[in-house]
Amino acid sequence: MIQSISGVLVHRVEDAPIATHVIAGNDHSSLRRTSKLMIALSCTENILHMDWLAHSARAGKLLPCKNYLLLFDKKSEKEQNIVMRETIRNGRACRRSGGLLFGYSIYFCKGVAGKSSPPEHELNLIISSAGGVFLQELSQDCYPENTIIIASDPVTDNQRDEPNVEMVAQEGNGFFTSSWLFQCIMTQELNFQVYTKKSLSTPISNRKDAKYSRSRTGSLSCAISVCSIDSSKSGLTRTSRRTYS
Image 1 (cartoon, one colour):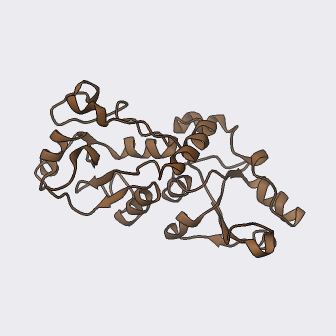
Image 2: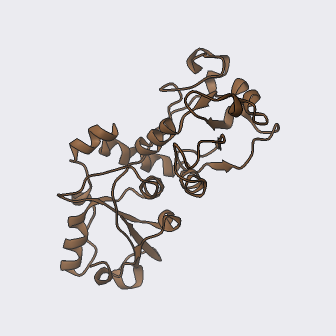
């Protein structure tokens, strides 16, 4: 079906950032949070039902996406604690301003990647797709107010002892968990006041640097299938399109 609309299926998580269409569910499969989905949701608003692909293939051309957006999977929305319509709207706004994490650097403490979170290379893709910078190490020259530290829950002594971690957490935004970060990606809303693991147990809303808190809008998640579409054959103005599932 994908080839009939000049599409190319994207299998690898490394290719998720080029997805333009996300086949995220059908009548038998619901949305679920995956690395590929979180990456793609930061890149496109075309979060679609499988019917879009089937009907487009039957028509021999790309059909408009608006009638196939996954807006009515209430069970999955409840499980993921999202509202798809809001996620899509938020994502659109985020992309106009550089992405949900634009202007932020994200550091994952040791013991997070590959355990309570996806492996490091997938985390890097999730962060960069949302406009953020993935930090391999935490420099003392970084800007604490623009740095988000992801740690275990609770934060371990070994994580606090990592170079510059405690200092940056105290002077900046505190500690957060991967669950908080992934929920931000899924809703495309960066809200520091929802949850923070501050090293001094002080809510960010009560701190002097609360001016650095900001809410950004935009994204979603599911089970998927991906393709890239040749614009020269489909009449599109872009050089390529990719559907991701």
